[in-house]
Amino acid sequence: MSTSGEAVRRYTVNTYCTAPFTPFGFDDLTCNWDGDVDVYADSDGTAVFTCGNGHNNETTMGDLGFGE
Image (tube, rainbow, N blue to C red; front, top):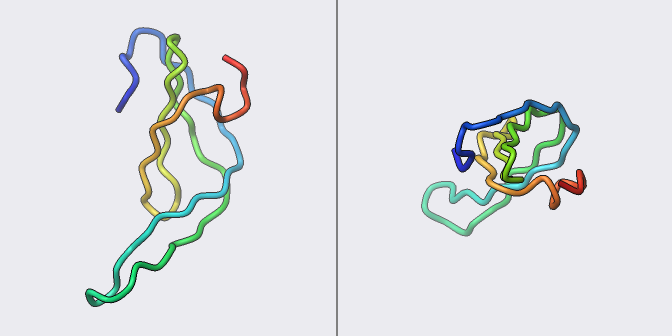
């Protein structure tokens, strides 16, 4: 987790995720998923969440549109 754990808050947001994967060693494809995820945000503005396709995301609350 990229959050420091000092003041973590949980938000549930609907999001769309993509993650590359390589089946059988061939070309990269994109695994698409959309739905509700729990986003864990820290007081410093960092945020982490895992999509339903298993893609771990480290971002900021600003990038998610929360303006923090």
